[in-house]
Length: 272
Length: 368
Image 1 (cartoon, helix red, strand yellow):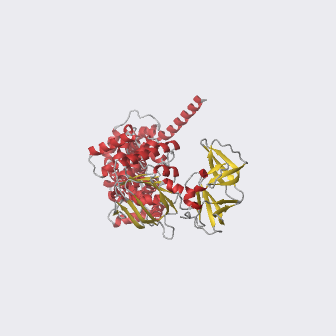
Image 2 (cartoon, rainbow over the protein chains, first blue to last red):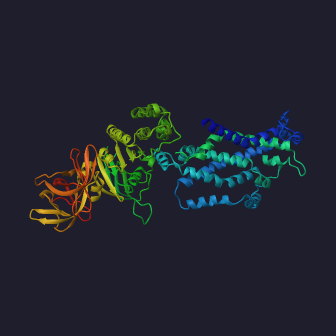
Image 3 (cartoon, rainbow over the protein chains, first blue to last red):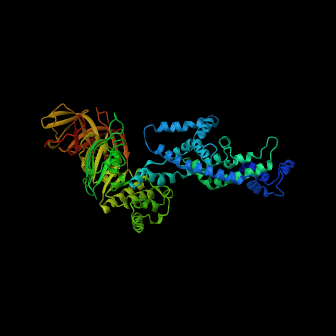
């Protein structure tokens, strides 16, 4: 009975792993094959493996610039989101002040607007302030669209930190500013990591705001770069897959680095 | 060591609502162990937090060693506090928890190390310095919390129900450790609890609070033996004092108290100034009631039916119904006495331990 249960569990795990990792492995195989080879057989192994496609995409298709732009914009946005979001969440969770819940509600209510509603206004604002078609402009938009969700996730975590810890730190001689950096933030690290990884993945793959707010080649991000291989009449599937792999690798690296903390953040409070 | 003076300290959270602490006046002497005791919501923790500087004072004056500290932030009051939840920083090791307050005060590193090791040695934490709080037992966490207060060498120690989260056995041993700590350090300590055993065993004086006000302050046995009102009488003791609605009646010898069908003639030294016919509350502690008839003027007899017997090993608690009295009378008798439920017994009341309270519940002083 024990063996049967174990076998069933293993089978279920194998099935789920295939389901989850299958598309990734397939895209990885496609990235090493040419479009002609792919059209001949969609699922064949990459033999021979065309590693040169990566250097071709990087140097000839401007992927190096897209990658650098994406990195600059997303890392800056995630950094601002993490610092501003955790500070705001700490204040909303920790301090009792007038209109605390009203501010929280207004912040959170912006989540309900779909991007299609806000994008026209954002376009107008960026043009007005001379930020249209700039990396700073897109960074600020990314911060604005992700801040409510970041605060929402962090606020609920900060609210669970016992107030006795803040009182103990105050008696120990620390100011509110120091308490945030030395007590609150380190304790909330699992939740902060969760928001870092969620924001990074969402913004790294973001397409809609980028395609509307960036038109210059020099400021394009990776998702826009992948679009270059999609023509009106035909698609360079092989190069799209190579571009996708270049885009996916940083996400995988970030996930591997933060995954343990992400799980801690998501399960915080589930087990006493 | 320090003198802490609370002068009409008041805390109002919401206008229009009753104050959480209402004109609390109290002086805690040099090196004294003062316990603030009372039920939940009586204002004892609010008072302690005002002393700590964690709550703003609505009105009144707080002084430490004669210096008014109402506007002085918590960090500059030279106090240390032990919290009910221990409040250990979960992301720091035991050593870092102990050193956290010293680092902020720019104490040199070698001195921090020396003090942390000394305190850890005293509290038996030397082998645990590298552990995080989640890897410690409840008792060890409590000792780290104590250590964090001791290592600072403050003028005043504040304790906010520090034993509440411990199991019964650990509570007794940690209580003993806190008592030893006070004797060793000789520091001024203010200790908040709702547990009367902690208050009686640890406190040099007890301040009993109710509804935000100080009800009585005194040495443990003093407040136990001479409660100033029915609240204190009922709050201290387990089982608490028997409080029976009664009427004062005049006799040729002085004053008698009648409850139900029983009349107790009070000895001359216990007779308070009271007009015959007044409504009073008659109080007597369970240990002042013994089973069986005792002769002499120092005792009064009480006929009652036993309705419940609780043998506790060292003693037996009895609940008995007195004719004409709604509330059962509790008696604490020796474990060797054999009393059955339903038996009609004669009990003796020790009249030297009788209390009489007026209609508003205030203790009436015996006639001088």
